[in-house]
Structures are given as C-alpha cells and as structure tokens.
Length: 229
Image (cartoon, rainbow, N blue to C red):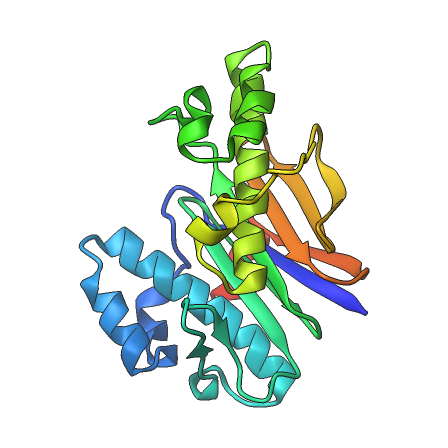
C-alpha cells in the first residue's frame, strides 16, 4: 500500500498562476470561505490548494474537479463519500502539500516563521516533556528546527485522528517522544514521518500502517507547467 505525497512550491506570489479562473472548483461552503479572506494572496492560496487537490482526486475518481465534494467530521476533517480514497491537505506561506492514499493519513507543512519565535517559549505550544527537549538545544537555529519538527508532527497526528489540537496536545509526547532528526518514528500505534525542505519548511505525515511513501515535488518552471495549464 502506497501513500502519495504532493508538494508544490508556490514562490513569493503564494498562489497558483492564473488561479482566479479556477474558482468554479469550489462548492458553496468553500466559496463562502474564499470570500471571507481579507487579502487576495490568502484567498488565492486557499483556492490554489483546493484546485490542486481536487484535480488529483478527480483524476483518480474518473470525474472532473468541479464534481469533487468534501464532507467534514465534527472537528472539521474533510473526507470523501464512500471512504475508499483518503486525502489530507496543508499549506503555508509559500507551499501547498497534500496526501492521497487508500488509508487515512494526516499531513502538515510549516514555514519556519522568522516573524515570531515560538521555539523560545515551547511550553506554550507543546507538552512540557517536549518543551524540555527543545530548550536543551544549544543554538537558536537548533531550537527552531526542533520546535517545527515536533509541532508539524503533532499537527499531522491531529489531522490523522480527525481530532482537536487541544485534545492531542495534552498527551502528545507525555510518555516520552524523541524526534532528534528527520525520519520515520513509531508513536502510540501510529507512524510519524518528518522532513525539512529547503531549510525553510517542515513537512510531516502521520499514518497508521506501514506503507511506501511516494513523493512528488513541483516547483519553479515545472510547477507552472504542471499546474497552470
């Protein structure tokens, strides 16, 4: 069983080329969210992510992106009717990532945010046992990378479970969890995979059963050719 991970670097503009013309892929609820964004860049990033994901799901379902509709669990996790195909989606300032698989999975991508420094107060965001790992790092850069490694793994696990951030944060790492480097880790019956990308983002995946991970990266000219046609 394979899990396919798609990553799109969307550059400083933060959205898919020619994206305003793709708005027809949004359903009524998504369209309301789209119009609630204050800034065009945020609105178009949201639309870019939905368009790319629905395009891939439509290909697998032998339909068109406009016909792909999401349902949501009580905590807001999206899913498809039928349950045979699973997906999850994440995006940050300059990237979009999503996963498609025959088994449930959660994905998260985080940009290393230099405007704030949550790694200097990790106990405000993560369980105390993990915060202690981070505060023991010898440099600010090491603390930053360690913080985002744990944070993105926790976010991916939240999305795998379809849970709330609060419910997972209260237990994540409480019994000990050491993620010193990028790689694959077993945690409480699930599998966590985390990887730094181009020294600016952390990509993490959570899933429940061993699987081959297939990565598809699109950026620069390849991204524009793939997504803007």
